Length: 466
Image (cartoon, rainbow, N blue to C red; front, side, top):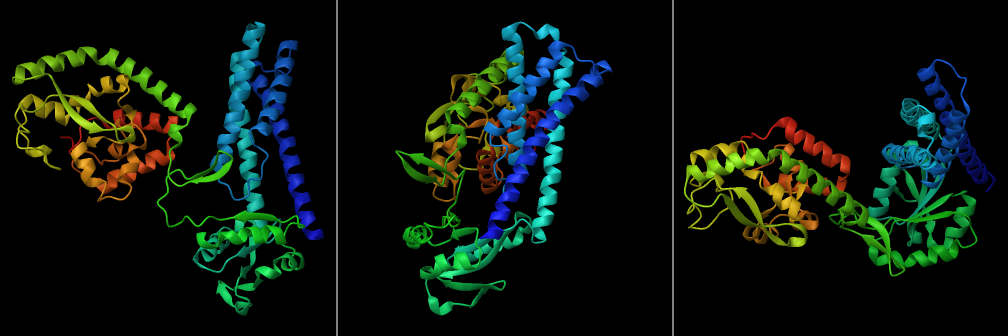
């Protein structure tokens, strides 16, 4: 076990080194930013106090936010988010303290802004380099963790294959544990042997200097996890369980706790979390209110155009399905003759409808969609989200297209990931659903801003608009 202890000591040294480098980065970038702003390093008392406070708060928040957890196997993007969140929070606290103590006028805001940006850049730069160095060392057999996988079926082989493909993680599979002792020393995948059965696991962990045991059993066999924990109760080995959920269609799957019970979410949306739902609602209310204020003269002109082009109401109300499968009346400027749908509706029949000349113009330019900002303000829709469909088509497609109803886990939108990628109007519905589910899986405030920007950048005119 001496070798295993050495590995853990190396990890502790890496963490200590990261803490030291983070503090050094915060302090050095603070001085560098001051020099860039004032061309000297003779800091007055106010700037010295802010520099010291910023270093203390920054180092503390990096620790609190999980900046020094084991990043082995995790993506660099998750580390980027952690560092940026901690740094932005640090400088917000500095601004709040300056406001509370009425000292904001005593130091340069340009210095603080430069310090924020440069500290993020340098901290992420050295961490990226550190990742590359550790990845190279692990690929060469240094700073590794020895892994035993319990199971010999498809799931176990899939796990082993993933670990073999990612050598930079330093997780080396030393063998499989099987229930069938007769299979001992048989090769399962890429020359990894079955080294024994469950009854021998405690002995094998000691003899092979194993650091981690991964349980990769089918759902019907996970009861044996208790047997593994009992056998390894006196060992310091890390035990991990890989749930057999690869066969499920997953959406934002995660682990949570309900009534004290561990629960795996196979399909959910992080947009339903209180803070994200509030942020999304705030985004919709503010933007839709501002947009309606700006486009009100245009909408007035369009309303007059609709009224003069053909008899009938200005707005066309159509029942659509939104969040949680709830129906609502979606508003559009009327582009068709009043009796266009007297024979019913059918999928893909938009181009065959009796459309007025003015209606053809507002459809082609998507100006007929502008009243939907009223739907957003009312709370029926969101600015960004999956496009809503009619109830009759929802009832049909939910039985025909896998994952179709999952798009109703969030509010319907005026624009979305599918629309900016060209899947709008009477286009491939399966492709649109794939885009909608991608949006729900990867939602963030910044993704919404990107979609809104690209909607304006690419323009409203589209060959499939109808």
